[in-house]
Length: 204
Image (cartoon, rainbow, N blue to C red):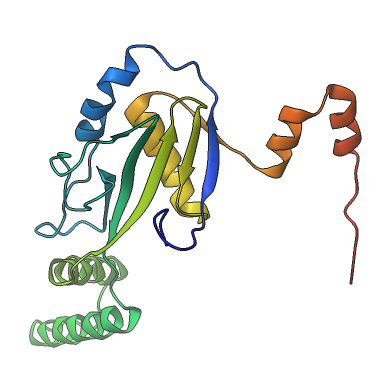
């Protein structure tokens, strides 16, 4: 569920770099520059980028601007093609059978390992063209007054991809606000040294 749902799972971040003053007016252009690129017509496995908070198909922000009061609201869209393992296995076996038949006609006894790898890659590319990508969007709220960024996900791989794309787009780095980071922001050095020396308690 996203931020507009009855409940939401999200990850908090803070910006750890000074934000250049000229970045704020250029953010709409940056969003369009690094927006999501559709892969329905090309056999790519994944595609990701920014899209409108209100409409996952709007990568030009015609339906609604990203500015929402003191916040910026947009979405991180990730489309992924997934070939079921059983489907891939079946079609690879069919391709190997055809290759074996051709080899017998030419007097060859077996298929070289390199050729098997090549056939598997060819089958995978062919199937990629027939499988539609599965779209997913993850809402993003950027509170410009506090320097906090909220992503509607707590999946590690998705977060890593989001952080990489955020830095590429805006040239500023984010740090996840884990309990340890929050403690470091509130405690002095003496208290943090004590916290670093704490040992976990076993309740089982």
